[in-house]
Image (cartoon, rainbow, N blue to C red; front, side):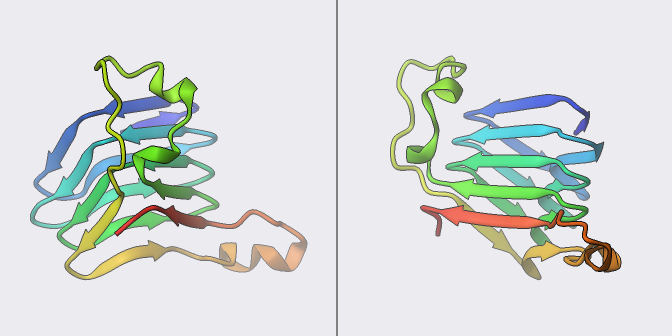
Length: 142
């Protein structure tokens, strides 16, 4: 779990939880969360990834698998799901393996809901000119 203003990186990882969240942010403001060629799996309940309160999750070639949901987005959080081909040189320079995983596509797989966005209008905040919105973007995914 990433909190506060942290930056978190997963490379070539498999993260599994019995329930709740495999990869998650909580009470963050500006958390940057990166996953490359990895899997986030919640086995008996829960979700693969959560982005809340202005947290930014960038998933490259990552499978989000949840017994209930693949991803949850709330409070202006963002989940960007891409194939590994979209990863930039700066991110790849942090990877410790010798060869990048080319062409690995992102995947969302869930038993109930693929992507859930809480309060897309920020509970009426749009009425006062607040332009913050929850976002899901996908490129090169299955």
